[in-house]
Length: 221
Image (cartoon, rainbow, N blue to C red; front, side, top):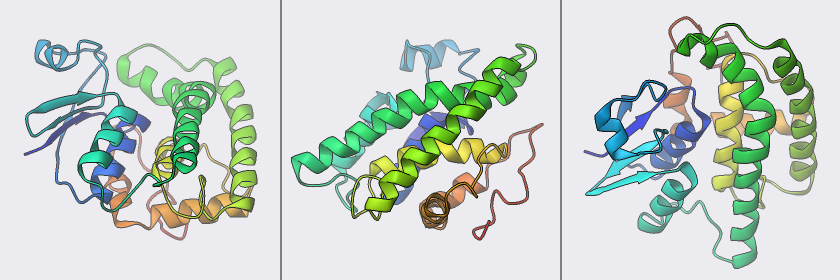
């Protein structure tokens, strides 16, 4: 059995979960308190980070590397374009959301509101929360600009770029930190992603102490 060591509200873990589910690869989910790692977990990934995927005889880490490994070993259905320019654009957007969006928004909202409590690190820093709340508007505007020109974020078909963005936004949606009324085109894009069978396990996630908002699992918002 494949096994994924994860945290439910980690966008990087969700990105891998979406990829696995879209490829119809069965996996056992094992929650890992990465902030208090076990010796066994550190042997699997000395960096002490999730996600870590044990697949066949391999132990894989780093979400982008894991997803591209899955794409190469299980090519259908495809999540990367066949042409070099298309693959570049997907990778560029994956880096945008994994790096810029994550650092400017997710780490300032989700980590302050949820992770600090889970890790026993005190109360949210209001300056970080304010910064994240302002920056998410910029990112939603950028997504709207992309989607005004394309059917999906990276082009005319759904790719890993869409899963990467949706993984970040789904975590923030869990804590009601996304203004879906800012751009109808972004809301429609997320509704399409949210309605995919691969997304259903994410909608069932429950984090103790942080109940889902009413709209979170509603496919019609």
